[in-house]
Length: 94
Image 1 (tube, rainbow, N blue to C red):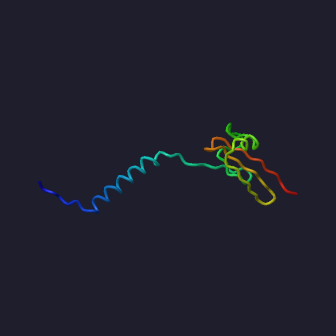
Image 2: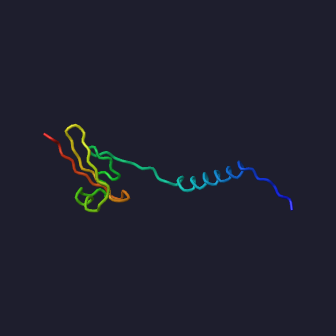
Image 3: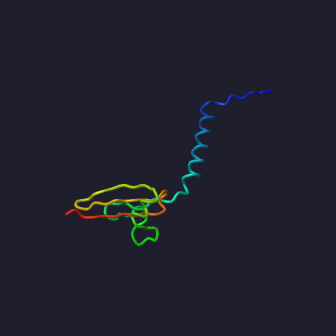
């Protein structure tokens, strides 16, 4: 029986190439994320989109909720889990 030595670099190179191929297969098909700003909220679904709902509706679904401010504008922003729907409410101080 003849034993061949396989170098460590060749094995690690093969593992690296396999990992790269798996990453390309997993992430190459992803769709880009878009955000539309309403007030100061970056929303996945802006007003006019059927998936834009009232802030209270969005808030009741326990998604991602945040606040922001820009000048005298203050907003409460919301996304459903998985960004399937968006909602917001803004008011001006003054």
